Length: 404
Image: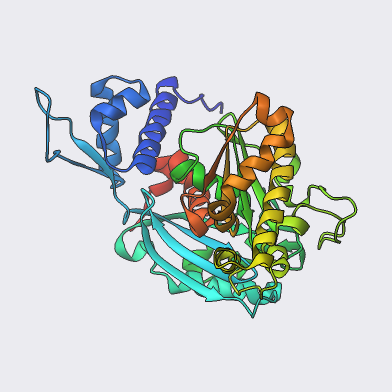
């Protein structure tokens, strides 16, 4: 028997439902008239789409409290965080974190487990800890809700298709099947959920694009440093994954061929010059457990010449690397995340001054430098957005049977 193709009107309706829910998820409270303008459909179609999503429990409508223009006020559409949720996880050397996030981005629960004094724990122990964190969260189905999935941010090369961590030098992992291992360890209520794994810097970039400093920018670089240095790239409003999703390992861009040996095996990688441990040690200070650079910034502000010199040297190497990235990518914006937020706050003028000497890139394609708006939550926000993707792509199918 030949199965007929989907009716074109069904495809259009499916697309428009996704558009409306995405807008409500990313914006929060939005008037029905604003949704009409954003989606390009007429008012009656918008009302019908909102009504479908409301019957599914994903959105609700309110009458606005204030109304300045003539005529009937347009209802305000809001997400229902308790109805649709996602779990976001972040794996790091210094800690692992979990958040249960509701539709619209509201954090409903969070958990943190410290690392083992800065030393990576085994893969098996990490999976066990992650499972414990997930299972300590309230199950959305218990309150009639739906969990869209689990997103995990990891500092390493990730094969997105199956959640295989190909190489994470700072965790000392090679070819570790994180998604499959976690699914096997979780209780049945959680193990049936889709589990998606992404590079932490890529997800940091997604977080900033969705809810942070990159909103309104289509071409930007998200730069993050903790133990290592990573980058997330957006071009034309889309992530730039590269072959097999391995683009963005900018911390291993060689900037100083005669420099120090990197954990990856190469010499003179960018992270050997701007990694948080490198800068802290150059300042003559002990590396804190969270790899923050605030101690270096505070020492420099207090008149410590060695700390001031370390900040200046970091600013110089940052400008050199940014110059290389700008020549290749021509971004509108560069966001400083992770430990580099402290560097930006303390040395932004010096970075600008050194960057002015990088020639072609800055002269012909100027870019903005900006601190992360999400701070250390950026990878978690991106992981949640990754987990929400199936729901946002197909709202009614994803929530069918939830809470029943």
